[in-house]
Image: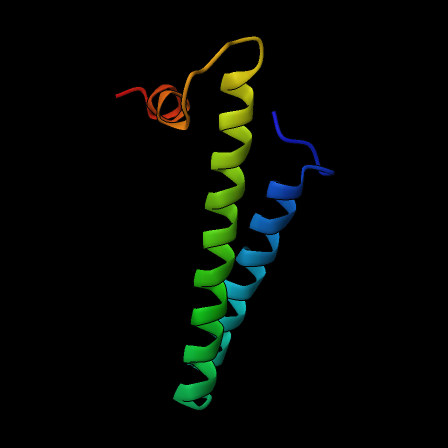
Length: 80
């Protein structure tokens, strides 16, 4: 279970705050360009979360195992 010190949890909390801010900006009828900039920032943040999750899962799956290739690790991570 994630703890408060978990960096991914912290990232997700920040993203949640960003999304709430975007909603407020929209309801306050802020400039479209400003809102879109924030949407782009959230998308970037979500990309970092996805990368970090994949990285930590690949590390977890490879502990104690001998994988021949990155493809083997990814197959285990995605279980396909």
